[in-house]
Image (cartoon, rainbow over all chains, first blue to last red; front, side, top):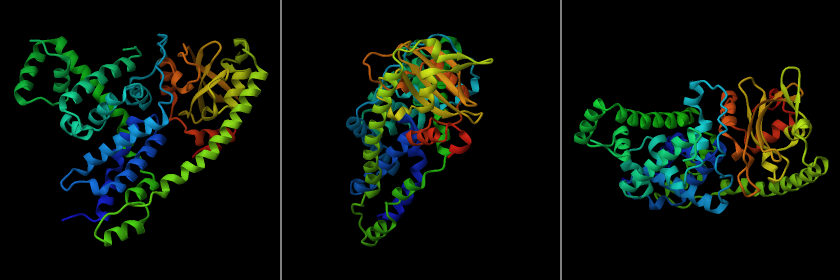
Length: 165
Length: 256
């Protein structure tokens, strides 16, 4: 039995918090993230006929978001992406609580990752997908996903520790 | 037995089959170095996932929920009644884009005028004029104070003597802005204090080559930490930055 548009709409609404989180992991701020969610959802509605029966809606939506993000970056250029300057070594005291939970430094470090690594990190570490699910969304073999994820993690740790990888 | 980093990562992520998993678990028991490497993977995962976790608790903007339901309600109903899903109008997507064009032109003209004004007014300003000792704090002076008061990050060309980076609201309720002094390559953070700006952190910021670039990207790790220690929420977007400026950086008026 096929779902009505209304039912699909409700299921997309249920996915919105996760889509916003994924978009936030790819963008520099929530404003840009929500613009990305909007274009992905609009794109999904335009191409709903391509949603094969039995295909997981979440996986399909995340894949559309990935495409929308990449297309968006191609058309707007990669604004504001310059390497983080070297650390001066002078660190004001920040409580471990801030470091652990803060979005600022993680988001900043994420924005320095190459696209493919950022996508792998966002799907596995942020969205909590298994390697298999993430590889399906990105339409790549698991081995490729694993190596992108591993490289992304190395670069991310380096950036978070204030070092150039 | 030595394990490569990808295997240890997959172990930390719970991705290995039962046999390999128990092998590594046994090895980790005996080898503190191995245990440390696994722990690093887990800690990074926890930190990254924790950072974005709170997005799930935020309320979803109504415009997104509407679009998710298929844009205009009537469109989704009629498609459903035909038993078939068709293309939906996407007018909502284009309206704000058109509005931005006009705004961008105005912004460009404004920043050009501001740039001309600034280069006429201060040519390679001396550091001493920019940072002024207050009673018991360092205050912004001269062109820095002027830029903090008037300059919007969204309208910068990148060649200004002072570049404004991120603007955000601090936990104390006042506004703070990060900046870079192009000439002396100093990055800093200033927070609104009374009618002025108190400079609470500075750091040397080797500007990347290539001239025009976003000042927000010139955040040094030290400045980023100073921001994190103070920020309440995220950086303001262009619109919020503008309304904060119009309020005279009075957080009570511009709250949104």
